[in-house]
Length: 79
Image (cartoon, rainbow, N blue to C red; front, side):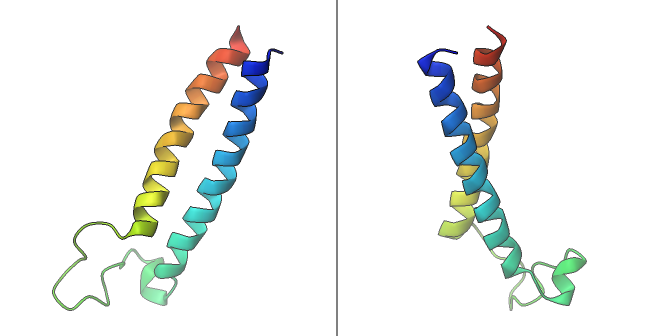
């Protein structure tokens, strides 16, 4: 394995751990009984929340980077 492949695998593992962490953080927000049935906006006064908070943005970008890392790591390992 080349240095680039080893580096890609290490980045992939770090991103996967970060994605698990941010996903678990986001699940705590809707941990009530209503959140189990898809009612994430049950406690808002004027409808659903508009936009993302910083934690949601981090979870989104970590997911996007993880997806890109999946493709890059698979391409490097296939060589």
